Image (cartoon, rainbow over all chains, first blue to last red; front, side, top):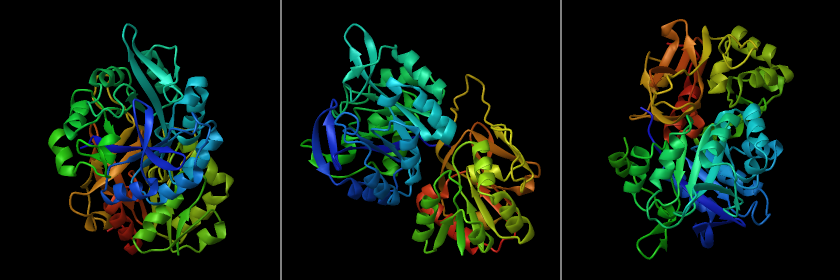
Length: 253
Length: 208
């Protein structure tokens, strides 16, 4: 049986591992390669690395760091951040990365998703959608680390990403990011019921129960966690950790 | 020498890394001379079928591989697209496949209201369909990482080595003679994949 995936989602900024709250206040939480090594030893299902400064701060794609991380990864790895062209994608995939995560580039030109899918297959393209819930306007997609809004309504936007060739959708609630208040299950449900490709839910995981809920009630194929994987306890002490397979099995089908 | 074929698709380096972890050295190359002298071959691959066949042709590797596999009987392991390329043809493309397996590659088709999403992506368990080097060396509770929208269908059920389940039975691995292939990615399947690659290195190249 296909198991729902549990995925540590690690944020990079200027070569360091950070964790944000609502896409703001990046806090330094350690060395990314060390973290990848630990998650590999824990035999997690998959790993997602996102460089949040690559586009927003213009630091670009950290090829060397990605290559180093990939060589430590005996599980699938996805990378996102600053990818602007098929050539960028080709270089990243050649480093030993399975998938690329595309957000801002798709917002300005969806052709990058189409071209990447045509050249490397749909399974190599994860389209990322960052979402805020607006008081009167409902859900709205954003890009450039939550700085710019996408005019297309959310459901239409995720469907157009799927149609362009995204093999997977990563949906992140900006409002819940780093809060550990639980996923926005309604948002995830909306996305999973709008597309036929697998959906990774992110933003808000505070417990293994939250992960179970977003899979069972939200229809997510994978639960990504940030704070839960790098903090421990009420005081958010930095500690790389992850739910055990037994804990995950108890909450997921 | 174990040779991992580099034809511009997928991640030969990941396969080499996993082999190294299992204690085996391997060369990643597209050099026909090196491929000719290989004691065992691995054909990895991620991506579209026609792109894969075209890349092999462009590098002049189709004849080289046919000689090694068909005439010299060199053991070969195809991974993911590598397995699909060993079939006769695929619904994904128009180019003929390598045709080493009596099999065709078909797209997943599920009714619109089915729970299964495409691609089949994630960790799945497998069941031996025949006794092969793959089943003999498999760790308990083995799970493997799959990511594919197409799968192979073998004419002869005896060629199916492992199956998985996704909306129905799906070929997870096929073995015929010296030709073996997995639909999943052993190089990305932690200790389970490591054990499998180690088993391939020990394999005598006969299906039984």
